[in-house]
Image (cartoon, rainbow, N blue to C red):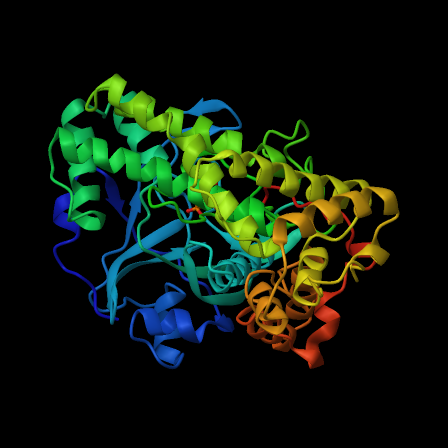
Length: 484
Ligand SMILES: Nc1ncnc2c1ncn2[C@@H]1O[C@H](COP(=O)(O)OP(=O)(O)OP(=O)(O)O)[C@@H](O)[C@H]1O
């Protein structure tokens, strides 16, 4: 790995230099070849293993933990920070730089009461979902590897420690700005310094003045809205949308009790620690805006309120437009009239009508959408119909859909295009759980197989048909806790 050397200088006051606490007897549990290619790595080897396990220094790496704060479940936590994640710096790759972070590499000044560790279960889940989302074409941080060990750690029961090696275009969170606005260590100058750093790192095309700052905040609003549109379209529930888990770049970030929907349920809650459903699947669009409002509040000292409010007011538009693009593609309908016309409203109703039917008929989200890749769109009789109990409801919807769709001239082409946007395979919780149980028994092959499967989520993989099944009874409604 080749690290950028001037990175640190620009960040003074925003981090603490730390030393990782190594993992004894480390072993590779997972490795992502295409994430490795991002930073010019080819094969995992022993030296890299010891380096990423924190047992020996990696040449050129800097080792730091950042301070930030954030709103967690609606309340402000004034002092958070990388309590178990150590950033090595920015590694150079063929197409740019990536932060490399060791998540679970021991205590830092921000560990509070935590042990600085991550358990294997959560490290594997973060690895799988990072790579799965990427291959679903959803913006996300990436995962290079999972390193396991026999080091015992205590959560609800005794587990073993592991490290996820995370690659991120940026580790800057909404919570960074909140910290430098609200804390005693913060100031207008510090906020400006942080924003100028963000711009120079990630938005070199923007000027470092009021006009650039406003343009930047508009970008953050749009990127966040687009990310959430992706989650809603694919059926992904993040589970812990605290502002310290919101990437400034609009990448999916920090994976805990996340879930892909099995049965479609608007009110689905995947986080055991969220009994009121603050972060339920259907709440995510609203939470995205709420989080942006918290970010805007933190920016008041350096960006005029009117400009912040004007940008926030574009959120709904970006969200709806991005969602419409994704959902029209899933349904195979084309935008005929200009965006923003009455057709948008009619299409939202058509889409909402379908999701309501899915919910009322207790249908599987992924498999139901995948059916569009087999549908004969010119036929009055839909192969989808058999899945519904409410046949009259389906028939009414299908008639409206066919009217909107019109005649399709190239049916095979239409179906192939639907297969490229309606995935066959997603990371269902029970699949992750099976791979984790195998790892606990010393067998990493199921994890490797699942990872491979998820790198081609849109392809038929007949030998892996079973992975597309709805969960067995034990895996239905698996709800994870925040403890990881
Ligand atoms: N085991 C732990 N030891 C120390 N600090 C922890 C531990 N688990 C979580 N934290 C800290 O608690 C806060 C909230 O945790 P959260 O789970 O959102 O983050 P994370 O998953 O640890 O890290 P990241 O956001 O970098 O993915 C963060 O400041 C985090 O560093």
